[in-house]
Picture 1 (tube, rainbow, N blue to C red):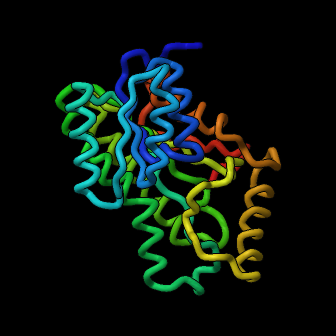
Picture 2 (tube, rainbow, N blue to C red):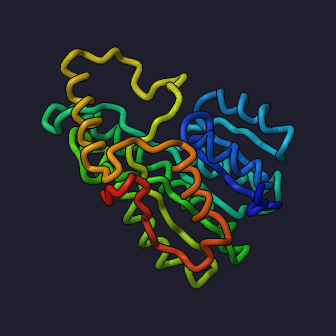
Picture 3 (cartoon, helix red, strand yellow):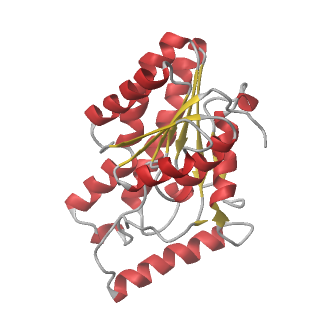
Amino acid sequence: MSKRFQEKVAVITGAAQGIGRRVAERMAAEGGRLVLVDRSELVHELSHELSGIAEVLSLTGDLEQAGDCQRVMTAAVERFGRLDILINNVGGTIWAKPFDRYLEHEIEAEVRRSLFPTLWCCHAALPQMLKQGKGAIVNVSSVATRGVNRVPYGAAKGGVNALTACLAFETAEFGIRVNATAPGGTEAPPRRIPRNTAEQSEQEKVWYQQIVDQTIQSSLMKRYGTTDEQAAAILFLASDEASYITGVTLPVAGGDLG
């Protein structure tokens, strides 16, 4: 196993499930020192599982709030003395339906979920990375910036793409790289805590199936990806192997460019 992250300190958000969990598992195996963050207490279970192979700190918090993001970065530096890598993985569609069917509070909730955690975490991590003169940020966006039945989510992820490009322009001269991946459809274990706890109506199931159909059709490979395929791209951009790459949003979607 490569040790690309030996002694590197990485904050991974949304680490309890899905892509974030797989990134944490693989980075731990490659020598990283991890700060795992999630709003779910499940993140402490993962921390316990990884404690035998890596030094891990797990924290809960609502990263839609700037104060919690600041608290996380402060705790990371207090524990490990530095912050080398930030992987912003919080986000995800809450509802799936045509835009005219969204209610005002639903639109706001989608944007808060899928843009603000990345925005606030970048803002909170920058002072330490600027002080060090080095750092790598990887934001997890989505190819759903072009797709059906997810306009508010797509708009939020479009904001993540813009944030990535603009922040890369600002920070490159200070030794900080800022990139993003844009996952397509990804097969992951069933979520133990769903993003939306309400039972889907028959109409909502139809709208969600339209997303699945469009996602597969838009992919040249005509399939969903795996969490390992998503994690591999994230870890590459976070590593020194990508030392001459910044400001890039890399689609990881079987040929769908978003």
